Image (cartoon, rainbow, N blue to C red):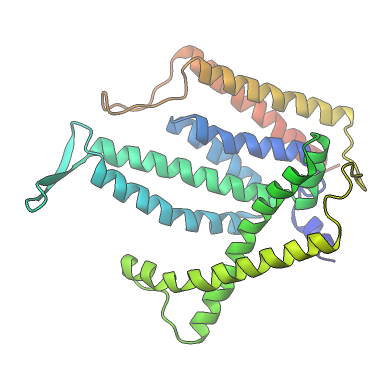
Length: 303
């Protein structure tokens, strides 16, 4: 029954899982290998379009909300430890430690770009968890001929992350019902209050891992090396065309990176990110190719 609800809710659920997995994986890889915020904006645009198409914006915002805490730490540590740059904002003198905290515009902007990259990685990872079911992931890895033990490890790692978020929200609601103050206007106090959620969250995770281990042992996991799939993934000509475009996108991304494009360094000279004519043409080609893939997947859901 839950599967039927999921099929009706996510528009892309019944698509070929390999196609949507590779498409979202491309969006996951771009902020990892590129440092230019222009590529980040392109990635964010496609993530928003896919999320609106499948009506999962609220679920994606959950990953965004938890990513903000990590971004805050990135900005703080960069400002304290990194004093590179020539455009000074403020200098904090610490005479007892004989150390000066030099805050520059380069450091602040660099921290914001890194935070933007982290947010994109988290929400694209969340999009994979939402739109690609663990059963579909199992079929994908079986199609790729990966060892089944490795498949199980990857699927569990992907599956446990949203479960941890769900457990976190449940534990937080329980603590609030007991009158424990978790939300505060003071960010430091807010973080300290939420530290009490770690112990029950860890205990619950360990208990779940023991249950999974017992279930695997009782069902004879790993006895048979060759496993079968109830519904194997099938490709029609339309799927093969979209798959060829996705492979071409990865090749194009590799070419852009090997040519030294997609990087942005602001410590040498403080300037806005720019593109030469050849890189601009490659970027436009990448945008057009991804747009065709998106329209192709959307068209297939409407059939």
